Image (cartoon, rainbow, N blue to C red; front, side, top):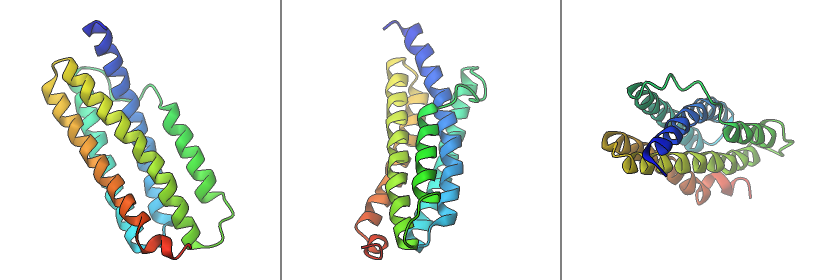
Length: 165
């Protein structure tokens, strides 16, 4: 792929990532507010901070390339994850708070995988384009998303799910 083609894809994917971050930030705040387990609420609060930071970094990279504020295109994939999460967490007839916490963990794992895939892809595209500062910034976003997912992995083996068993 010619560099100009890759750059066009890179910039489009950055805009899509900004959209995904905006959507996942709002969703994560809602999940945090509905979680009953203290450790889960704390992990989701950390998630909101991490997503905000990632969004700021993506927007700064977009600005550096003169590619707008990241309002378009909308990430339809994240919109689907958000809709699915709302149906499974907020609209579902769950038996109790522990069941809702389990659903929150499951759905948030899906959201973090989206972020991991997006940031890693963007970092690799930036490397290929010789944009080392962008690559470093986006790699940091990837590593932060890994931390968020690690928090959910810890919750999977912790007390939050013992209550739901």
